[in-house]
Image (cartoon, rainbow, N blue to C red; front, side):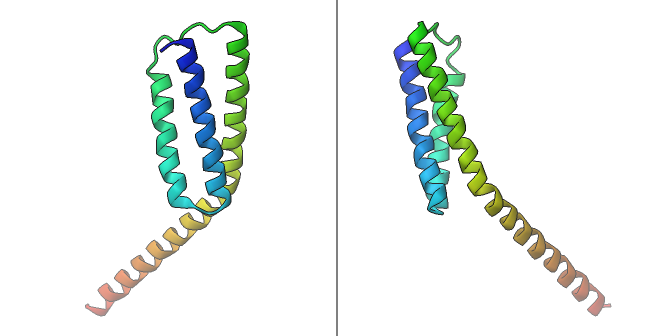
Length: 111
């Protein structure tokens, strides 16, 4: 991957994280999942780009700026999704607990 391709890949990741943030803000969970997969494919592309090309000073500064923006978007996405994930986990645990109680009750009934 060339330096230009590397920067373009980081920019593509940034564009996707912006869409992910918008989807999270609008409770579009299915869209968020699709975008997350797209983002993962691009990050895998960077990870598998070994070694990453040496960037000139301007490109390196640009890369750092883009990464900081990606991390900022990611933090905002987590701030939105974390309470939802905790609520979902609680609901799943409550449902599982209720199911186990029902099973235990039915087991005792059959004795």
